[in-house]
Image (cartoon, rainbow, N blue to C red; front, side):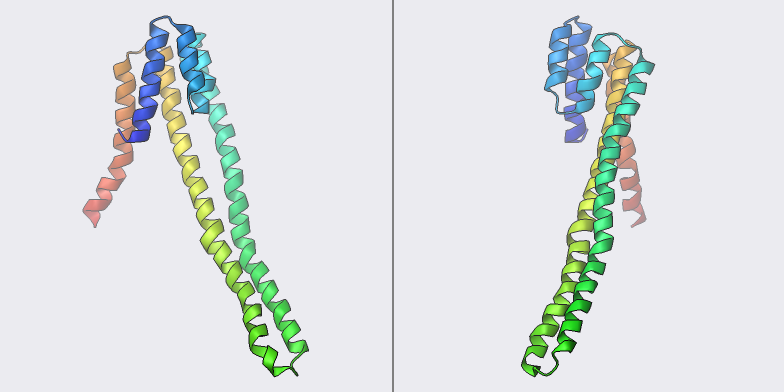
Length: 190
C-alpha cells in the first residue's frame, strides 16, 4: 500500500476490530478522531448496524458534497486564470494611452512603456504561475479524496455486511494495483 492507503486501511481495520468486539464507544471514538470526515460520518452508521446499501448511498451523497465544494474552488481559480491576462492587457492599454497622451516628455517614454508592459507580464504570471497550478492541485485533491472516499465507503460497507477484514485488505490491494497499473504500462511504452 502507499502510505496514505496504509493509514486509511489501518484506521478502518482498527475501527472494524472495535465494532466486531462489540465496543461501540471505542469504535465511535476512533471514527471521531479520524481526519477523514467520511469515516466520522459513516462510522456511526456502521455502529448502528445500517445496511451496506444504506452506508454506500450515504457515502455517495457525502462524497458528492465534498467534491462539489472542491470543484467550485477549482472553477474559481480557472476563471481567475482566464481573466488575469485580460486584466493585464487592459492595464497595458491604459498605460499606453497615458504614455501617448504625454509624448512630449521623451525621458518618460521608456519607463512609461515598461510600466505599461508590466501589467501584461503580471497578468500572465498570475494566470500561469499561480491560478492554473492552484486549479490543478485542487482537481488532484478532489480526485484523491473521491477515490479514497469510495474505497472507505466500500470498506465500511463490507464491514457492515459482516465480511472479514481480509476482504477489506483485498479491496485496498486491488485499488492499489489499479492505481499502479497505468503507470507501469507507461514505463514500457517509453
